[in-house]
Length: 361
Image (cartoon, rainbow, N blue to C red; front, side, top):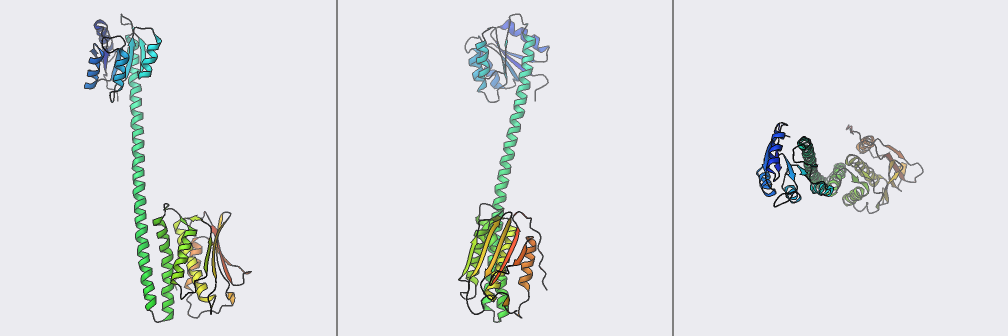
């Protein structure tokens, strides 16, 4: 901010003219300091306290241009008004290119002093505007740096959270697997195996987020590939050996990826249990984009609608599928033209996920 009474350093070897400048500018609100040559002026500027400089061209030792160049090399140098008796426009151009804020022609009687006051005021305003601009730019850069640091820290924390959640869910799935292996009752074993698959479906999303560069989306083709590998490893015997996947690399938000994973887990496990009662058979999972929609299908070539109902079934799987479909705002239909069972789930690629509620009866 410009002080109430700014200090002007007048660098000129003409002592008489310097006294005229001092008297004239004092009346106009300036404190004037005189330096008889460039070297003395440079030393005074380095001491500090100079707000604006009026600099003559012709002096012993350093001339005005040489002195100006050295002033501009001083950090935080004050603005300079170049003053000379010469009418040569080349000097003016050279001075302005070297960094002078303004240029004017002086006379020996001091008639130029009012013009010098106007030029000095303009140079001070220009310098103040420049300082404000630099401070604003510095603040913008600092804000960007702070934002980038916070964003990097947030991303690191999110990765750590997803890593820990994924590990915790994997531990839970492993415990369920151990419990299922030690269970003696088939219905308990089946319930624990189903629960393990549901937990593993959620854990896969967190593993994907931890290892991905993008924490806001999951590539469904990669996610489903890993999920089906988990299902193959956890399946009863070798009945998953013909589980196939055909999926486009569609990206989706993690919440809906969880819902899709749970649906695939439920429908694939249902096909494993009921589609081929006395043999292993193919189960196909397909995922594709059709316009603005995503279409997911799970199909088998088994007994289809002729499958007898299982008296041990609680209907939990159907309720979970319905709840996840509602979360996706999806329609789910059976393909009547398919020889076995083919269920088709369709939902909007851009739809917002809704909270899911699973009724447990």
